[in-house]
Amino acid sequence: MRAGHAALLSTLEPLLAAVWAAIVLGERLEPLQALGGAMVLGAAGLIFGTRLRAAAGRR
Figure 1 (cartoon, one colour):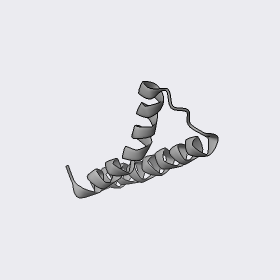
Figure 2 (cartoon, rainbow, N blue to C red):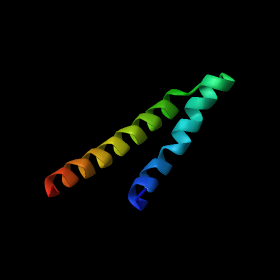
Figure 3 (cartoon, rainbow, N blue to C red):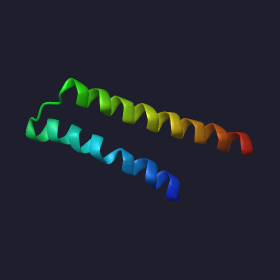
């Protein structure tokens, strides 16, 4: 795995921990926490999608 992909995946760790806490432990996410999670997912998707398109253009 390349360093850039590993860094991108590591940004998802807190979000995934919160989701698992909600599922397994019954924790509740506050609206602001859910918004933050959505922002993290959106940023990760934007970065990953941009990199995929750039890689496809180099082929």
